[in-house]
Length: 125
Image (cartoon, rainbow, N blue to C red; front, side):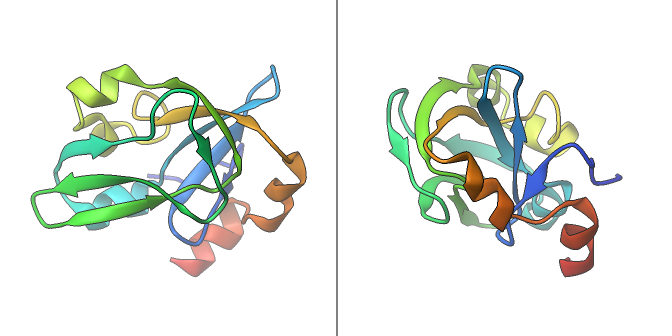
């Protein structure tokens, strides 16, 4: 699966996609879901919670292990992808579209500058 060029990536394998309204969607990369194996459970922060760049924001449980999720940006959680709660396998089948995790109101959009573009991310994996 090709790494989409329309978003930024963290070294911890999360992505962030800026939305037209200035919020950002957050998810995990294809590489991350491939390393995890079959995802069976996702724990995410609550609506209204503040998450911090590079700090833990939740967990993903797969048949192999439980792994921490780290936020690629700082901001307030304004939406949770409820579909992932009911169908955690969406992280495996569609990590860049239907398998997004949450939407964040960014505290500081300049944080995006510290993240990797698709070619830098691919070179790091």
